[in-house]
Length: 385
Image 1 (tube, rainbow, N blue to C red):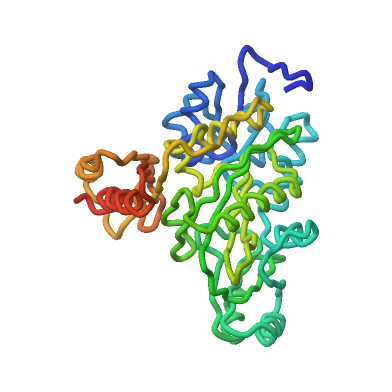
Image 2 (image 1 turned 30 degrees about the vertical axis):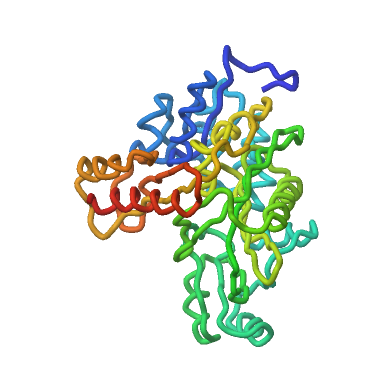
């Protein structure tokens, strides 16, 4: 897109690298705004290709594939952080507009870089260190006590790449299994009062809107449920929103940025960030004036941003994770739709135990009630009853 705000074609055009559920859920607001949406998919079976007709299948490390996908498009964006920032820098050098840019992605894809960026910006994070040897892990344990939580600096997602260590002797196999050059981020195990998240939409010229703080419920490193508003003290919510805006500025985010927090010992600490639409913001489709997916499109295109305000007193989102056995799909859908207040989102993915297959959102007047109803509908999709 030119600096004048004109588009390269008759209407705005956005290419999403990655064709998972985030790209899939971006299709509806793109259609509503008459934005041409394309995806660069890794395989023909990636779930967004079923709802986005203009899809290119190929390797994002192949410049010819990227050029074909982005031909005539205004901006390239992402539904994950798996593309190496050096590859993205190559696209930028070739003249493509990419949001978020390579510098932001270099931070977001590396937990050690995230921690360093937050420290440099005076944004509070948990006590932490980097370790490449058993001795370095042991030294951190001697300083902060056991157990420890250790995280692969790169490559982990949804609970993968995270380990709890009771003693230094457990570090050796973890370190041995890491790719060359990838250190561990080492932290004490914290006694958390709560976990929460905030989404910020930010344009290339720095305009922002900030979504409500939501409470997240994690299990085995995977988000299981989100409740909006968080129900936490007002000063905690305000602190989280303030910090999220500071993080967006510090990493020069463009598009949606999700910031996850720990509330512990009376402090709000940044845990992780993701420069894209995020699981903790799915509730916004039904519960906010403007969904995170619509505001991601608006922000990467430099358009006016929509209101992020809640339009209901309370909302809950519950993830649908694959159970031990796949239920009959028609029976499961019928069972879930028997909960008339539930909004069902299925991602068109093949069943696998623990895999995110969809989510359910319920809006209403009371946080506890909507959470219970969302959980019931999600359970129906898992077990078919």
